Image 1 (cartoon, rainbow, N blue to C red):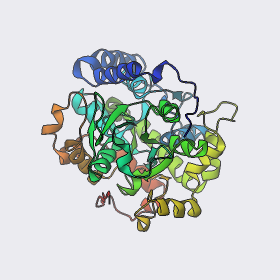
Image 2 (tube, one colour; image 1 turned 120 degrees about the vertical axis):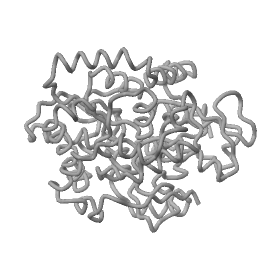
Image 3 (cartoon, rainbow, N blue to C red; image 1 turned 90 degrees about the horizontal axis):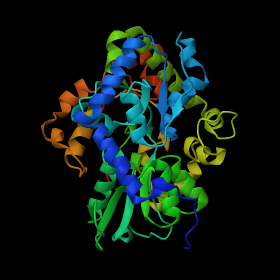
Image 4 (cartoon, helix red, strand yellow; image 1 turned 180 degrees about the horizontal axis):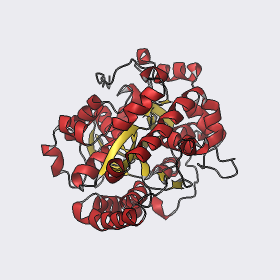
Length: 405
């Protein structure tokens, strides 16, 4: 396949990616987070009635936050809200959140574990933002998983469901993974990249694949520079990826405000499930003040169900568990404790670069109770019609299903 010439900015370089990782690692350490937490504390003291300030990355994981803003659901709850702030990288959004510049964000669920127990950040998960919504995408000429041996594959961050699922997939294929040096024939080098940098890197063949949130997998398909090898939701059934995270102080000191914020997000998820074509139009770049840089066709490929494409994915093996009937991306807000417990267990078995001593002593059941504050989302779900509004049984418990085969 002939390499495609993409315009690559300075953030595409290995050195820039390493700086971004080191910056985020510093933010998620006690010493690195402290100055920003002090700035954030002063900001909240000076502005105790701060409006809703959303921070997001331009991925479909952010859909409920953006729909809630577009449909004025926060205002309908009696809240003041500012225009959502779009960030390019996880380090940027985390820095803004710790400093109090934004107070409602979506973060990778494993990242919230690292944040709370690695840096002692006073933040809580209040809801899931979505389920599924990510894929492993590879070069078109990859015919079997062993073809990835001796190449580089990108992940959005070490603390991500993407990294967990990818390592399980590689292990199943008897491939090892490394984070430094040149990979051998049975090794895959894992590198951290911002989602927006992955497609150019794949198109120029600097990497052989990436595992990331949509719509970057759909973009690779439409541009014919990559193909979906496996959906993460076909490995971990109904898994969360990004979650709604808020400051613990807001949850404690502004309970009415916090409840209204979560109400709006839950309402947005209910509305999204029944208005997917409208959501595509809301998020597309042809709007006067667009939320994302993505076009209609790319977003439609992700958000609009297609039985025909699902059948094709089943033929290629991108979908193996057809009985699960997973959506490419779906929306339900309840943060099941079993998922958090399983996630902590899986992180303990996953290679993550950087300081991770806290993981050894972290009790999964404790993390499920301490990291997540589900008071507000339970109330919001009941007000929205219960779990049945999301096509689920009326229960706040479930059993996790994880299967690579």
